[in-house]
Length: 365
Image: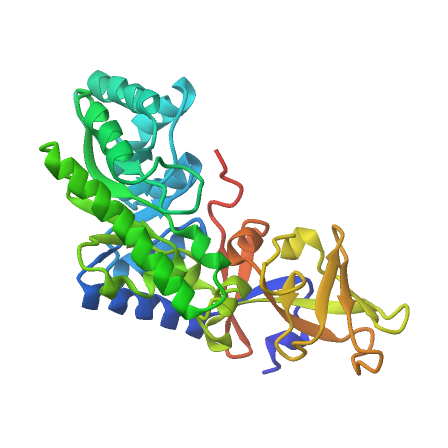
């Protein structure tokens, strides 16, 4: 049999299934040894197939970013889902009510008004909706400050009749701004400490929360060093990307996702044009590395610019790669690349195995 790469039409996004499975097993084993529940974030792969693999390996449930992702997963029979995103408005609350007929759903917020909407829904359904309160551990996105400020919010929300505050959550996404393993470890400790601090303030108020849930792939590596965490929600670990390479989270042998592109022009010295542009690689940048992806065979080549269908490579003047040649790229951010494609090409070695369907692609509401 010929190698799949002999007939692969580019641009193509491929997954090394052996690496994918190794990544899944490794994170599952890490969680089990640490005594922490693994609730992986499926926004990275948006795949029912991979979510089922994660559950088979011991995940306690899954995390999603949006209701649309949750609806896809629930329709496939996955019945324990955390929506790590606030649900606001009558239309979305109605969808949540329908979703809760199919699955156990936990929702999250950092706002009392949003919690009141959820409480009203819970009352109308004759139940209390389980709720995580989001805490800002340094990313500066959602969540109030840890400690007293968040504890006071929890105290108010806990009085609402249609919700039950069962946990605190945070996302140490700023770990991707670190350039070393030690930096990621520091963020992991700070991430957990922000929740422990808030939990202690709640104890003083006579309130208990049973779940302490942390997120981010780089910080998940250190979960065994932070006793008291009950759950972790890494996502990008399944595929790997440049953002994980530069933080020291993985090596190249942990990057299951690769983009293959063809050199379509060598218009002038120092320049090569490929057939993968922003609609394939996305324009996600990385603070620690120039360009929009890494060519493992040519690490000094820079994916310098992207238009919609073209990638602009800055190459040595004597770069020995002619028009018609295929190049392999590790993208900067696997999550956004996956969401641009209906299916990914699953490989065993250099042989085609099967396509991975991106079931929840485009489910952004």
